[in-house]
Each structure stands twice: as structure tokens, then as C-alpha cells.
Amino acid sequence: MSQRDQDIYSSAPLRNLLAEETVALAPGLQRCSGPHALLISAAANDTPPVLPLLGNWTRLSVAARQYDGDVKARVDEPLPFIDDAFDLVLLRHALEVSATPQDMLEEASRVLAPGGVLALTGLHPLSAWLPWMMWRTRGHSPTMHSPLLLERWVRRRELDIERIERVGRLWPSSHAGIDATHAFGGGYLLIARKRRRMATPIRLKPKALPATVNVSLAPGARRNAAS
Image 1: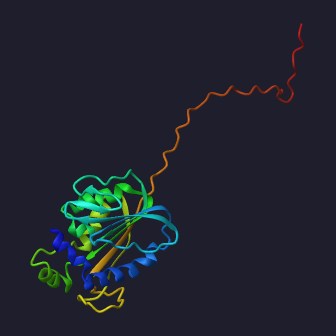
Image 2: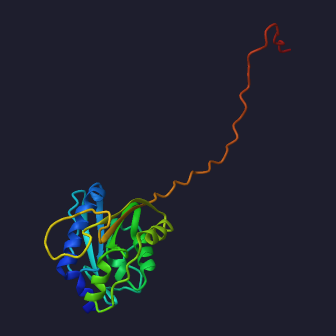
Image 3: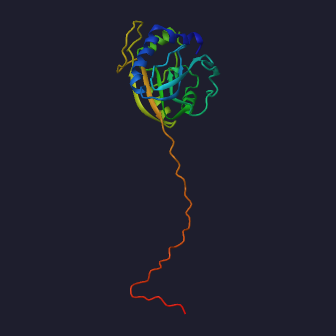
């Protein structure tokens, strides 16, 4: 997808949808805590949600063949972060502009700490937004993924689904206002949690103990006197 096509995410209808997604995500993310969170967005200069229990945000935007933002990197290479680095990873429409969405999801899971939350948002393929996107991008619309497909991808990566729902308005609108959830909204959200690693029990080596000698005599027995 070209940079010109990705500018669609700065349009008023999609900015409104991003705002509606933020409102809809809030209840599921308010309890996220930890020192680090990661935002990867299709929109340049996207603003992460305000979450009081989270520390610092690292912000990346997907631009053509590279990530821009706090870190610059190629999108066809692993994310430049260590394993388990983030307590929350938020992908906002990032999978639909990625040439390798499953690889991006794999990397998001890798850098997510056990017990951490992965949140996804995107455009729903079965919505009134599809013809509008095709018209605005001259037939080069982002690849919209069904939440059912994403659910299968997510479950393969040791993540447990906590919430999936449609969000936003039925069709694109430039008028400001919030319609956070709608059964046929143009967007969707998915929230999942990474399973905590099971503690490996320590195998204890049995140690031989000396048998206790019972020095008391049975009833009626007499101890021989030493000669």
C-alpha cells in the first residue's frame, strides 16, 4: 500500500472512527498496568489512550516499508525489541496495511509480556465502509480482515480472547461525535491476554534417612545384663 493511500487514515471519517475505538477500548484496558506499552498504528501521529496504570508508550506508525515514530525499522524484519518487553501492545489498523499481517501479529505476541494484553482494531470487511474505502483509495483499499479470522490467528499464539465486538458508525461520516459501539459498526476491536508461563516444579532428589532405632522393650521383655 502506498504512502498516498495510507493518508486515508488522516481523513475525518477515519479520525472519528479512531476516536470511537478509543472510547470502546477504555473499559477493557483501564486495568492494564506496567512500565511499558507499545502502539503500532496505520495512522501517522496517532495518540495512544490515556491509561493511568501504564508508564511509557512507545509509538510506531506503519509507513510503506518501514516503521516511523519513536524507533525506525523495516517492517519485513522483527520488531527491534526484546521478548516480553511490553505489558500492553495495541495494533490500530496496523494489520490491514501490513504486507505480512501474520508475521506482525507473531512479533506483537513475542514482545508482549506473559499476562499482558494485546488489543487490535481495524475496519470490518462486511460494512458500509468497504465501498467508501475503495472509492477513496482508487481501488487500493487496505486488506480488511474478518474478526473470525483474526480470532484463529490470535489463538495460535498462546493468547486467550477476552472480548470481540463491532464498534463505530455504520458508514463513514465527517461529522464529529461518538458512537462507540454498534452491532453493525464499521470497525471492530479484539482484546486478548497472553497466557502466563507455567512454573516448572523442581524435582527433589530423595535423600536416604537412617532408620530410627526403637530402644524401648516390648511389654514383658527383660534386658539381658552384660556379663
